[in-house]
Length: 353
Length: 102
Image (cartoon, rainbow over all chains, first blue to last red; front, top):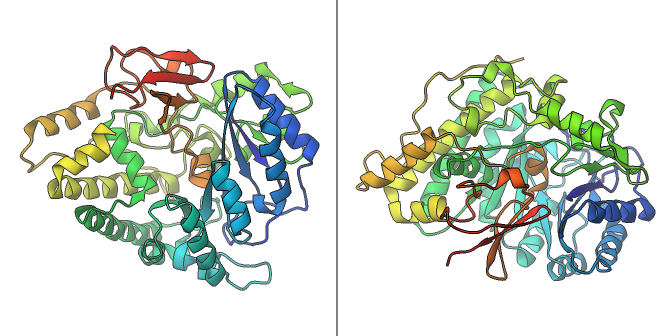
């Protein structure tokens, strides 16, 4: 069984778009190790563990302990990953992550960080983010960089991702501020669309020069087409339960602390009836989307996103709908250009692999 | 709040203008097919955590496709891990071991 561990709700930043509560809540060692026991006892020879937060590197010692603890389970293969704001990365941790094969993804909004990624006092941390990104890329050149755009920074997306590319990053994801209060409208989405068009041109340009840049939202849309597979399959509660700092188990991150969706705890175990019930409920796709030509390439069934944006797993927001349509059309625009530029490399990248 | 908008018809347009007619047919044919494959990236969690767990990896001569269940791996549904319907898949809990074919 795979799990995500919310090591803490606390963070050393106060990003403007963050949905976290930032309470001073930290997972105990006992809870973390019980969570690993639960995952191992969940069956299978593979356990995937994601370290999450808040900022998981506030609990560096606990991460070391979890990895050390896992070694007692002979015959079980562990894979580890984490997303960090990077500010607490250092050579020692990155060597450990390299030795233990912990996939480290870093949140960095590029130039948008000046606006949105702030210390609690209100100053931005772009300079330190850049320093830590360079350090991360020395150890993990293929590290994923996770950026977030808000309506106010939509016009900075291209320059931001170019900034990251110039520093050597090759793999990116871009989320939009998906809080209901984010304030997206047609104008800001139009701006975002234009920026993603420029990004697609940049990626295509690199592609023709033999340098591969992977913008995950585009990659997913293209692969959904070339591999004939849905872009997203939620499997809420089944795929990777979230273990909150206090040991309570929820189906996914947005349901943390919501009693109705609590599936159990690391002490009690997971209630299979509750888990199945939540999973079945998540299978109801948004009724509006029936018959939409983009259904298979959309993330309209992401229960987490839908719940965050609409308070209902089976409803999708207009903002996400527009973002998905932008991603699909811009991804296809980029793919058409790449295919024309170098058909063989396109086939290697999107069909053969 | 922005409005939802359904797209009635959409052509991705891959293959137009290329020399390879077979590629165009293959890509458009796959877009029209109705295969269901489980366990992919793209969820909210992945958008935050960059979760790579569903990417195939080499392991002892097999492609390991992680996080699948019996219902996810059947017939030609292989999550892109292999290209042949004849390949044998060994399931062990939530891992499928698929011969790499190379």
